[in-house]
Length: 283
Ligand code: PRT
Ligand code: ZN
Image (cartoon, rainbow, N blue to C red):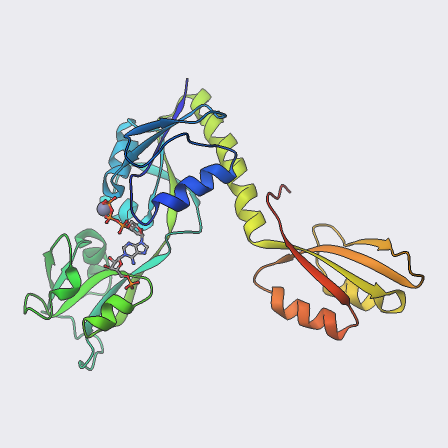
């Protein structure tokens, strides 16, 4: 018995999906051009598919789990469970208009909006009580205003450079999206166990990514102040150095407040600060 996972065949999610599996100890012999590949060291089979099709395959049970963008998962409205946000493929679904437009709602009322996300856009318009005409197009949405097909667009944005080069500006964000792990609602208990095992590993990898291991030297008379600055998993480890009157302090810091705390540590008398990535973190 093997767990079947659907990942994007090629595109923006492909590499990060395989990297995540690899960091979970699951190495796939061959990917890319094949439809299917097996892992050597975990009972899992990988199916390479178009991202838009992944929610459907998971709903149908052709795949047990899958990795897809929230934008696709919510647009397709399939009956699947979202198990975990994966921290990559980040983007936002936004409405954009010509950069020369002075925009303030209800500007969109009665306007034509081109998008590949008619479901999410309609939900947003309904919530805002706006009635606008949705033009569904499948690609190159950003050129629609320039050729007179629409007054506005609703599309994915990450760096914003596509909008910029097309003379558009982002005016409303309707969804923040990232890749998620989805699962079928009808898994056998055996498969459910495998999913939990995989999720355990994914969470350990994610936690590790968001944390750094910090080692520093401190004079003993400054130890108290320095330890106060360090949250650690429980409390920091303190080891005596060979030089009398000095200790080595080890702790774990979150990426978010990392630079702030490093500065405070230096100011408090810490020296020789080393910062090391953590591979897995189980707490
Ligand atoms: O062949 P297949 O159907 O599998 O691939 P695809 O071409 O449909 O998808 P792909 O690989 O482009 O994107 C897969 C997923 O990546 C999407 O469903 C999103 O969840 C996520 N993602 C993250 C993005 C972006 N960032 C993104 N910037 N998907 C698309 N874009 C496009 C956007 O549509 C626009 O054309 O990039 C352009 C904007 O980018 P910036 O950087 O110029 O703002
Ligand atoms: Zn696609």
